[in-house]
Image (cartoon, rainbow, N blue to C red; front, top):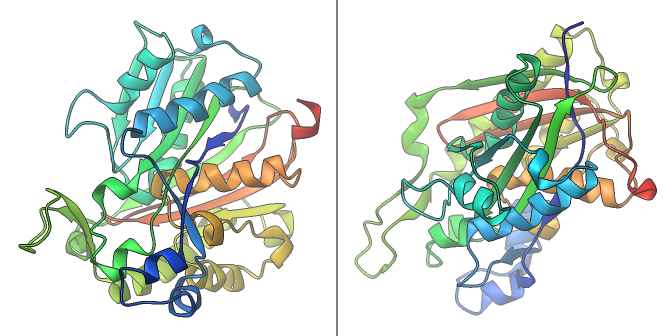
Length: 328
């Protein structure tokens, strides 16, 4: 029988520093009520200046390996999704994390798929495992989004935070990653990007820029369609889903998709209020939050859904194969 890939663990790490909406009021023309009403975000975590994306990812990775019942030497591939790598093009953040874990002679590389990065990672890890090329693939969504934020740009900087989420994907036919779908449309690339700032008073070389209203409209429709299509393709209904864990970009987007799918609040995992948008780290961080609160349990059928700059988007269906948190 052909091996099926399975998520065998989930873990996350968030920096200690909290930047809440009241803090933003001190230097932006905004207030807590305005931010909360439009985004659902109350606070976000910010890494220290000397804390790198690879540092965040390494801490999540160590815990994910431990929870999978493995040692670092058992990992034969590391793939990282990030829009805020340690270095501009090389070395990859995955190589840095491998070194931090004491690993050499293994496959390690980054991908760039913005907020849909974790879905893309799942597809890659699934392919590695089911082709028998690898045995234990460590996938990590890690972001120091604060490093590419223009904190004078109210429309963007209020949304993003830092953090990392990681999981180990291995073979297990009883708890498979059922299906993964990814897609893209580069004709929208000018709506959400990281490029050199055009503002003379901005000292940072690169900053995220976004046309928020246009992104919102495309995101809602695309996320709704993708979630509906993957359920239909796999002959599943909303009643078969134990948990819906979407990318945590904006509460209004999440609620619009949840309503379209007809899912109860108890099935929808929300962390956007605590962590903001952590891009590629968003979904695994939300999964970990549910896991550590004993909401996500072994055998649960989960629907994941994400959308990000590119545009790129994706969805996944999986049966969680890790131990219950209470059994660790």
